[in-house]
Length: 599
Image 1 (cartoon, one colour):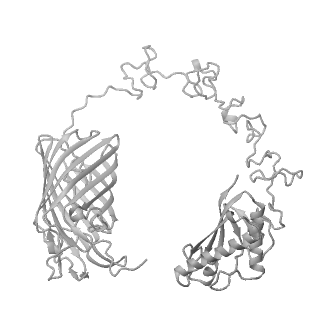
Image 2 (cartoon, one colour; image 1 turned 135 degrees about the vertical axis):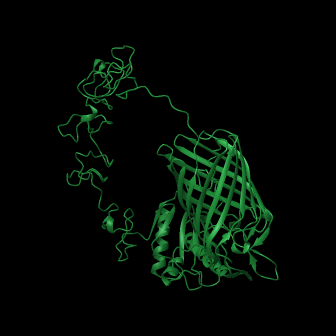
């Protein structure tokens, strides 16, 4: 690949240029983590618990990110403009009318560092202050449908960011922005989910590096599992955005996406803690290499209606003791008061009452046949009960060997020789009269005197060769839609003329023999290939000329011209590394590909 003078894969939440003459960028709110409103079970999404009237929630989220503003060059990190950044997001929410929520969040940067860098003549300075207040966030949401804890709840709302942060400290835009949004949440049993879609309308719309800072569309989604009587929620969250102004949507630098895995735990009444870790999954501007979150909240719950005292049921069988004829022994309900809640006699404990169990002393299965109901199953109906049948799904014969009882005569390797007679029951082979070799694979399938394990072409007879890759291979043979050759046709240097001599002659005669022996081969493409030495266009012409020379030789030996056509590929299709002499020798080749075959 060609190297570019400067590669910027991502600058995570950085600065915008002030003026062209100053050649120095100024910052904005770089932290792309926008925490959920206090009271949510998620870090970035809303669980939409909008119950109550006059209900509040307070809390803080600790947020640490690494390499959130990064200058990449040649695909590698060149400088981290903002290397480490730590925030504490202080927040609170107020709910009334059982559906409306107002919320406040104040991000406070408690640490930041980085290094100055210059990109395309523009200087990007590190954060001017370690400690700085961020843009204050005000929010309002109203529940449109559904109830908290139901399958689907939806809410519409918006967030307003006031310019209380510092652009030079990378904690503020310097201008207000507003973000209307639509959120959903719900659960199904122990599974919970949430999602959000909205638009951030920014006052600033300016290019930055290879990206842009401006209005964007944002999204988030999460799914998790509720544990410990709904006191713990664990699951992943994903959020991201893409700048939509000036045709920047879905470009790499303008589409930051992050993911994390987190958990929240209600450790005590009204006290909730959480922890999460994540990383960027796309190199958009504003994506850190890693992020960690810790949270603590005071979230008072809604009062629950007092439950009616449960009727006493000492044996736990669902029949209240006052109606249970056997209050200390679990049993099913019955219309007969004398049997209600009493266990049913079942000697073999197979769940089938002895009164209808055809085999009351042997565990079995339920069937519609009174003669077999409660008896051990016999799935293959061979007269041998499944517990004693070594092959319960294949009809077989009785045997004194427990491993063979109820099994058919088997042929595991499928070679037609039953295992009982097969000297190699797990390796397919032909039937022979010798018990020692019956059913065993042929050690020399092509009968060329070279054992299969040493034969490079075990199914094509050939001569011995000191080269392991050629040992036992013929000069040419038909395989996989190709006439393969183990040696190459030799040509004169920089010429299409076939080099005289035994090497080329034997290869071409072997190809001729295959074509003659297989008249069903209707069309063969003779391909010429070269290495990468020299001009590519000249190489392609030379490769085609060499292929034409081979076609001419075969036609001269009696092969019909319409069965062959030549094509040159030059250096386009190397099969070895052109960086070595051996690789270049291999790439200088002729190939024969069968295009049509009459069956």
